[in-house]
Image (cartoon, rainbow, N blue to C red; front, side, top):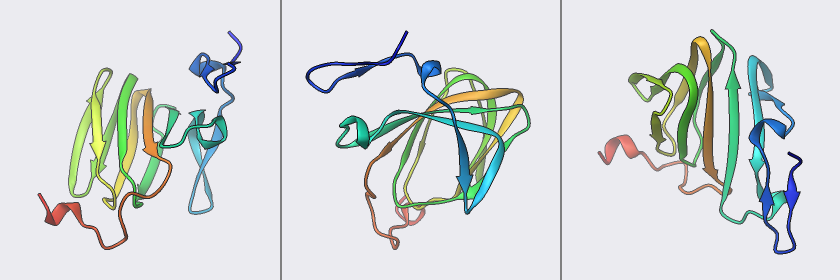
Length: 135
């Protein structure tokens, strides 16, 4: 199914029909990790972006943090996720909330992982916000 765009700005399509791109963190291309930007600001989205990640078995997204949250839903496979000092094993059907400014990283399981990750288009906190001290 081709990606359709309607007269009111809507966009409809199938995730796997969107071109996959490399994932680069700190200037380094991540091996075995790809991203599909399903919905973004250039599509007319004003608040959130929707991204579809695929991770090959054993691939890794190294630790990083930023001033916006993540809402994640695991579609297929499994992965280990570190959020701050806590590590979790998650799989198909799992959801994850990662607060802003908390370091996080991911390791794909033996069958790889596919997940949706929604983010706000703009930072939601400043660099001094520490959700770990709020809990």
